[in-house]
Length: 390
Image 1 (cartoon, rainbow, N blue to C red):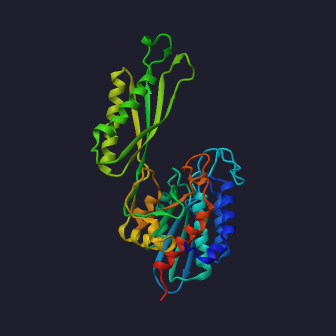
Image 2: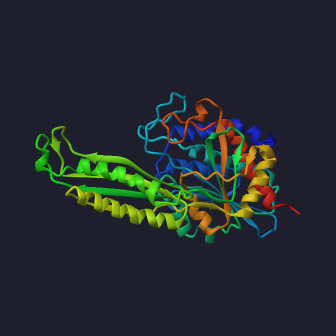
Image 3: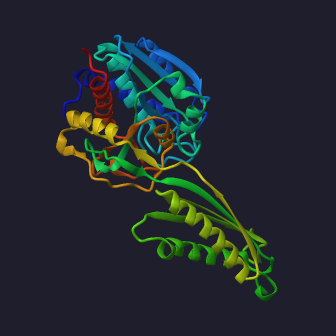
């Protein structure tokens, strides 16, 4: 694979940086150590640095030549609120916090591209290196856009990249249209009548009602939707009671809804309200649904997707770039940036059939350091391709 030679030379330094970030994970909008590390490294390479965007966000600006063209690259910096169970030497030093999605690697790949471009200056225009806080549910991408990210740092196009343990190392999935789903949050509260577990006839059991709601909610996808459409309704939390011999007064269920089309999103929200209310009433209880719309779908723009695929083919080889649409039901707040500017979200493989094929958000996950020079080279190639000299 034609990794850029200079990036290959400082692969070891980048690996050390990635592992340092991994060992010191920080949650969304709390990435003070990480953002300061990023800012100091950018400044050491002569890149103009802007701190404090969306709280802990950092933007590095690198200008060269006289062209008015510009491009943006985004990496996320936050971790997840979970405890790492791997035994790698660089495992998390903070209980309850872990880089289980590879944001430590994304940040490092973009730093590698920034260092290379700052040294070589083989482009004509402006490159904006966007280091974003709070992707994991905090909506840091939305906050950056709302705070005027693209007004302060104009970008003709913006690109993001995410590792994929499902793809073999050095392969990429790049296609136009919806790539990731919208992600909404649901909370269902069931109100029953508590009492002694030995006398259920005197009670209205919210646990039983909640169980029926879980079953009924699944039928929305299987029976209220056009089979051609795609959606997920998952109830992921069920909290009720404090004792094994007491029927509780209330139960609370929480989950997520994933969709691609607004019409499907609207239908599922409407049907969930109907199912929750009617199921509870049928059992003599009451229930209400709180439906919170979250990240919109991540939709890649056709022209920028083709440009990203061209750069990826130069680094990885044409046969390693998969252009057939295979949308995933995960979600990304890079979607807000794609609503504001044309661009593309790239999925790049890190799988090795071993520990680097462990899925995202798993307590044994670890970013594959062999991916660092590939991702950094792809970012750098894309900048040189889109901002050519001469």
